[in-house]
Length: 540
Image (cartoon, rainbow, N blue to C red; front, side):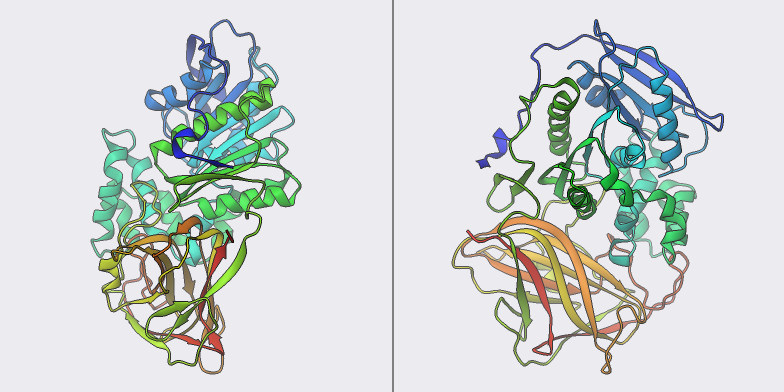
């Protein structure tokens, strides 16, 4: 099935009747430790104990949030409870980012004791609001009938330390956003303040003060626990229980979203457990208003089906993806899509790229200098437009290897997971490898499609007798058509700054390290060391 962008899930699903809405403000919700959280309740006038939609958020419960979630769903017959997380917008206690398990379960217990609770429940929300759902979903009980999660995942550890590197820009943006959200235009200025701080050259441990105006414990925790993430993230990681969630789950993500790889992993975990979740991936970035509208429409249809018995808004196939380059929506029975097969595109001498076998060749070389880190043009970031950008300026740098395939004789679609296998020798044990796939248009413009990073440490991965290491890099998944006459291009570099913190080459602590070591890198692509990118070919 193919649908166009404009016809994708109806902008208004469900009943034509819109209810008037009443609002109860600042309901006190007691926690076991004595802290009181505040919630607003949006009620469709005249409805008697209708299904409840719970939304837990650190970003407030009024203004645009109240309109988008509270009033929008109450107008369609649901009562909505919007609660401010601990330490935010009037709720008591100190902010405790990602500690949502205990407070979430206590909130469910409180809900069940209210005379207006009707016995059926859904949860909704994007990003942190979606993570708050996963934190309690496996233990929520049978009255949790449905969940609608968007641009989120059941754990944020891997997005914070993507490929073992530190996702500096997104982590600092969120730190700045939450520290300044009460101030005028705090959300609007967070990306600019973050970029200014990252370009200051100061040690990472000082950047929260430069960006947010004060030291932020959460940011310092991220830096401290980079070397040993399990100690901090163990009780904040709910990925192991995703398959135990019995509620019906729908997921909405974006090709340019920071959480997409791990959202897809959540989908696969539910499928492996025999569940039947729904997955939608559109041409959206994290803070894309188009994604918000689509996710709300998707949630409304999902909740009406699973809490009200109205199946009219459901689609036939559980997986719906937008194929970039083709500008088409596709419906499929599963992910990865049926018929997909991995295809190796080998790096070649002289900057070539080809699905044929590797050839005898000398390695390519580049030098990564952390004092002048390789920048990133485009790519997933928490706030700001992450849509593809022309990377030709980046490709002129000496610290970026560029491999370009032949002109395509027919449209070629790649839909699924992407990875790279590189054989690398470095002058230092501590270094990063960034791999990026681009679509080169006939006029020469080179637009990034997906990318990934891997941080290397001594012995991980192990080197052979010649000091060469086989490095596996996971890239973002894609759903893209490379059109006839276009070319596929691959970048290999040592950084993507400031989206990823630069690797200083020393192994010093992430927050305080300042000494820098230049890395001389060699990438091999001969038959015994066949460096390649693995693309998900879907035959026409």
